[in-house]
Length: 384
Image: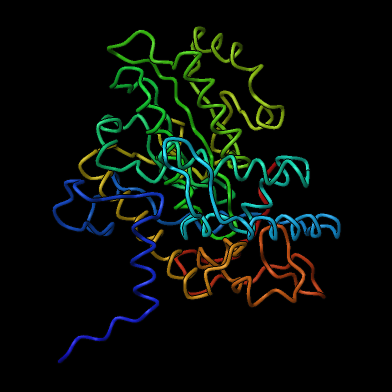
């Protein structure tokens, strides 16, 4: 039997995958593909939240906001070149066009208080930064050493379906370097890969449990300021909440030092030594945070499983984008396999701030997710 012919769409997908930001498994020492079902349930990351963990519905854009969004969309569509230093500037790529979703544009509009002049500057600035920083060049192979002790991992989802990103400074295994910050950026990108349809933010869970071998594993002020700048400038409205436990006096003083650099909206999302079961379902909350999940980080098991999972999510998103016509301003809910149609099929309908078409009789109503990995209803605006 002869092999099925390769279609033009498949060729397009293969070409764009080479420029896609995110997981690069070449040379990652993954000898055989590992399916999540083949791994110990205590060691790999989760694919799904529990049934009750669902994002709340998104508020509908006002008429004025819709006009500003449409104006920004037209501006972004006109971009032909992305400026960057060190010969990294050049024509806008398909992976960058894919990154410029409807929700992405809305995030930058809200971050700039709906400024028609500042929003495009911020967006273009982030595209420039992503090129100069080399976000697409960060690979699981190069950064594997940074995660060998499990000082960061993504595991489970909170009550509103946010992926839970755990930081464990006490497991620090490398000396301060730019690679430590690159590692954090890489893991933030993986959190975005694992977001369910309708959820656009993550939950950060930080455990300052002391290290047995090092007296001080908290990041320095300079590194902390660099991370805050990256988060606030290039990942606006991505932090849904931050849950922090086991804060020693030295780290408490550290937080007081960096507080002036944290914007007021971010401060409101910080929860110190709360009952974490109020924020994350106990069965998906790590035991170190007083949950019921007896998770054990095993790098040889977890790391290839995470990379494989994220690689598949990226491929799925890319295929949907190509099939729908490769639009700038595409709906992330559609791209993630949610219930919304492609933005091209909903252009005549009223849209909420998360890209979902709003039914006239029941504004903001949610439709069931079908055919995806997430069951239930999924729709939400980005948190401020």
